Length: 123
Image 1 (cartoon, rainbow, N blue to C red):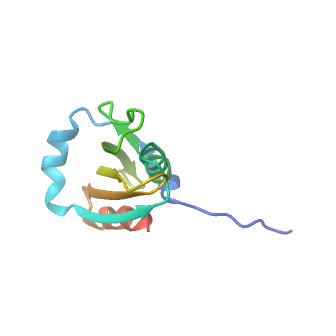
Image 2 (cartoon, rainbow, N blue to C red):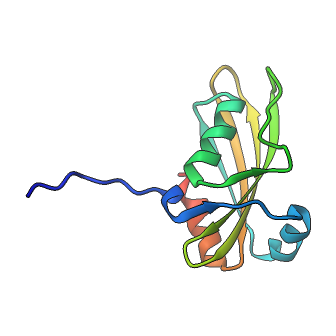
């Protein structure tokens, strides 16, 4: 039998779950936060939606709605990684022209190794 190639991404290991109080949970976990920056070929809104979908995380506290023609936007993400590891992310997306932006994302988790894995998935 022939097998087809299969591609797994971070969303395959993450469950979208909101946290009751994002900011309080972030404050508890932020000591082990991993911060990365990336250049993306997307609009601000496109980047927010693409990162949330790629990581398989839930946009929290109404931060998934990006105003029309926004030049920058901040969003909060949460999820549970394989093994029950709680993961939170804060991202800021800044427009650098049409369909170009810079993403700065901070990821923290109950397991610091998972925070590093999730942050590194974007590159």
